[in-house]
Image 1: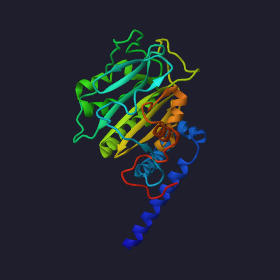
Image 2: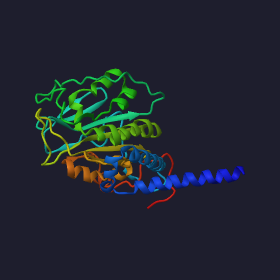
Image 3: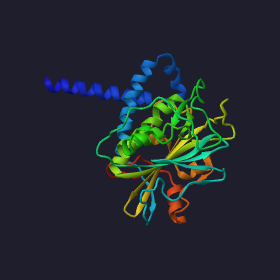
Image 4: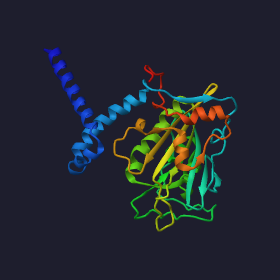
Length: 312
């Protein structure tokens, strides 16, 4: 009798999971109506499916990394392979824990670079609710630049990751407007935040030290708010890890209109794609062979804790 009930419960769990995965497979364009009419129904089943796929993707059992040979000392630099370069003039702002490539023309960071090391304990100070104007540049945006616009003040160098590695003063520097871009709430508080947490809590811990390059993607059609701040169409993030004589990259693009419950793995792109979208050249100090190896291919898995079982 006991085994019979175990079989029944197991079958119900499998049926429930199957339904969740089938519902998750419905394209967002068709599912959006259900999301608007019965949000609790959509949220429940999408949460179940999303948790399953998130666990599966983090295993990294299938797919490949993108890597290239590297010989040299990375020391304590905030970025790997030289300072990012672009055609647009920038002012490099150095902080305790990160660097910013700031554009006076667009009143926005074009890139932000930082490094996260493994820590024994996650300790950080209380998150402040106030942002400060960047006094080191002439073309500034106010701390209230996005008020009433429908956009969040989205960190590039993240509050949590910086605070847990560099302390309170460095944490407060992330609340300066030169480190902020306009992000839709569902991007800033959703998948973008999940990626930041995974980078800080998982990848930096298991790899001991990683480097991150992140920033906005603008286009000719990007809007400008009344405050003068330009609103990006999307955001990018490039994660770099060194293992012995190789370095590997994992790159993402996330558009402002990204659907809820999007899997991180579905937003993996090549560094070349980010360069084409931003006009910024990364890894310029590396050899041509290494730069090409890192930038041309798309990683087909998130960094795993163990090696892949299947390659494709």
